[in-house]
Image 1: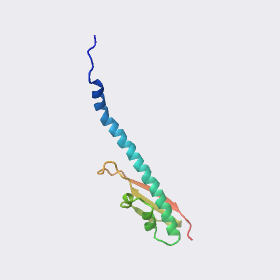
Image 2 (image 1 turned 45 degrees about the horizontal axis):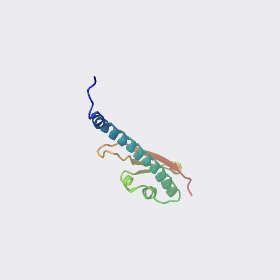
Image 3 (image 1 turned 120 degrees about the vertical axis):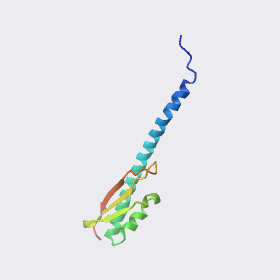
Image 4 (image 1 turned 90 degrees about the horizontal axis):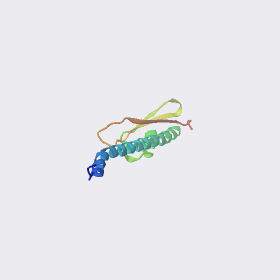
Length: 110
């Protein structure tokens, strides 16, 4: 005869919670990285358009980024109307540094 297993479901839930929390954190981190990459692309296009008409590409890129991504912004003008933009990837755990998202765009001089 088997012994009753009172509380077994609660024990399994408590054991599974850290795994669930880690999976949610990873999913959120992937979403943040995707958003930063998309925002860097939009900022690169704006910076390239600004450079093509003689305006400040860094100001244009900054104007197309969310405030939390402006802090790590790098804008480099290259030859042929190309502009490279990179931003720091935001982290779910603030002390972690996860690298940068890079994007380039070009627009012929006007």
